[in-house]
Image 1 (cartoon, rainbow, N blue to C red):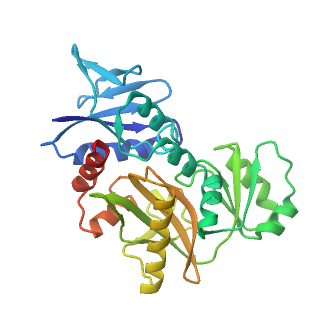
Image 2 (image 1 turned 30 degrees about the vertical axis):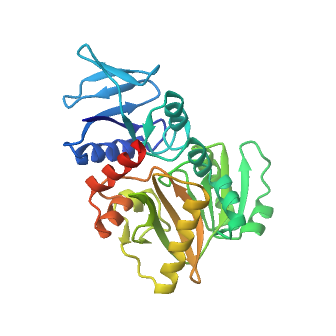
Length: 323
């Protein structure tokens, strides 16, 4: 019986979604093979939480926990932290130093994909298309006219390093631009401003399944709101259609681009990337390496469509990490 630490929580606005994801993993672990431990990672405490909600502190020196006088160590960590420190490479580097296996990609890939600006710059030479963009660091002088001339209106103002659509605005008028910038700076000290791409939005899961890189069935996003924001993602204000309504040619192109991005980046574990299709050509918005694993989340929907149960999905991730 292998001990699996399921890390959840984190230090960002996404911590509540992460706790949900972590609990879904815990509930769907194959109990004939694994003993799951729910580990809450917060700035103020790292604790193991048992089924009675009793908390036991984690020893950060070796990532162990002592429960009723017994020291427990872990064979593998299942990473379910969205945002920092689980999705930006910090936990990955920590576990690598401790020589503990974990289910997500390596620390470099995590840090790179968490930074939208750097990710898109690395993929561009490989022919992966993106929106026209402009970058700002907090404190930079802002020439609104020059930025709008470059990206056009409407445009998107986004924190460079955050998820779940926190801090994102769609700007229709020049007058609203600076408010959108302020809103994005609440989440991050770097901002990415992107041209509006008019097309179909799709979300594509790519995983290593039993040693082979596979692209899961594609999800089409139809938001009732102005874009796929937090409400659309988590409060039911969108339709998520899996499989997406694409022509065979477009679907093949999306699959090709998504798989190429995964392989170029030498990814491992789960990834979910978002694209806007303009005239059948995918333009990448971002890639998530710790995508949501709640029952409403896209990767579980896509896996189900592919005939992969949550238990199989999680077992596969753990077995690949252990191997």
